[in-house]
Image (cartoon, rainbow, N blue to C red):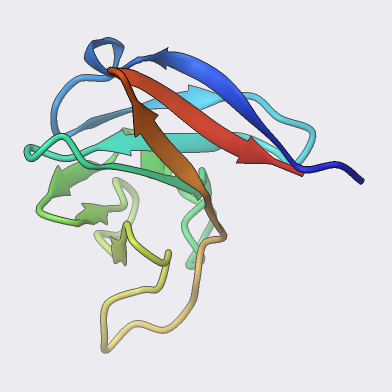
Length: 104
C-alpha cells in the first residue's frame, strides 16, 4: 500500500493546547497542537478504557484523558508511569502553516 501525506487543515484551525479529530479507515485520529505550536497525532482512544483523548487537556507534550486522568505522551502515545499502555501515534508535519498527516 502506498504511503501518502494528506493535507488536514491550516495550523490556526486547531486551537492551541487543543485538538481536532480526523476520521480515517484506521479509526478516529486526534491531531493535537501544543502551546508552542508543535503538532502530534494519536489514535483517539486512551489505552486504559478507550476514552476520547481529543477531549483531554493538553499541557506541554502530554494530554490528560478526560475519563480517568491518564496522562499520554503526545510524542509517542505512551502512558506516563506508573500507568502502562500506548495509543498509536501517526506521523504529522507542519509546512507553510498547513498540517499534514501521513496515511498508509
